[in-house]
Image (cartoon, rainbow, N blue to C red; front, side, top):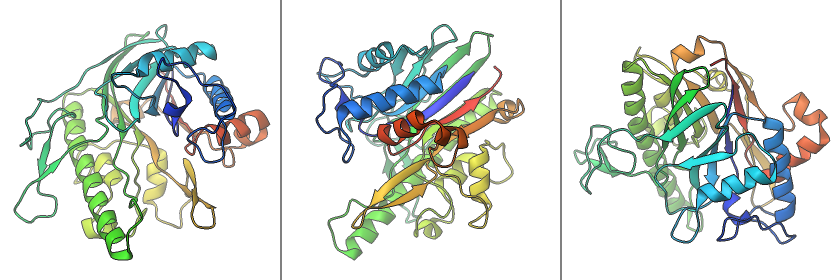
Length: 341
């Protein structure tokens, strides 16, 4: 079985309010990329992935006028994908939903949120992801009220072989400052974003601990916007959000080989799953942001991870159609997990 996480930049801008693809030559939300070029690139990439399940990060919007599921299912029909049914969890207000696109012949899936709902005051007991989490992250004696702008998608999944597992799709808080202010304002913004991102990861780790304690197979996948040493303010908090999610203090750990490489420090090989243009000169920055973390029970099955990077993966580079499709489709590249379940 192949499970994928894929952040599709401005997927929403490729659809009209009826969920139909806008397959014209106007510009998409991607810089200097036309809609028809991005759509064609996405078709090539999704067909090449041939996945049983894709956790789509930045999926088309869900609101009173637009709906994620028909948009994704229409996209799947257009390109003849096996992964042709979609589900979402709690919608958000960012035009960047988290959704699962999956093959109903290979598995069954349903949104299955855990934890209790909260009021505005929140709770410290790992509440439901559309609620409020109380955490005194800066140790000032006053609990911070933490919310997800994009609540994680919790999926109960059963494979055709009858294996039951949990998937949690994640798009954690970006730590990048919004820009537009002076250096001091940008520093405060960056530190505040780092605090929120770390708090979200602590909340998510509490949920992970619950599943591992129950002996459940678990996969946490998505865009974590994080990795050790990724920004200058990490030392203020002593750890990265990725380290929190993987597990600390001798408890049960999740596993991802790319995360392990990053933990090896800057002298180790540095994988990357995203490639961004950086102003003012437009040079490219690469970063490892997208992960598939698995529980010990699944790691024991010796799955195979792959980053579909057009310049780092030899097979992706050798296939000019796929290479160009990956570059047109998104500023992130898919990460896949092949596992016998």
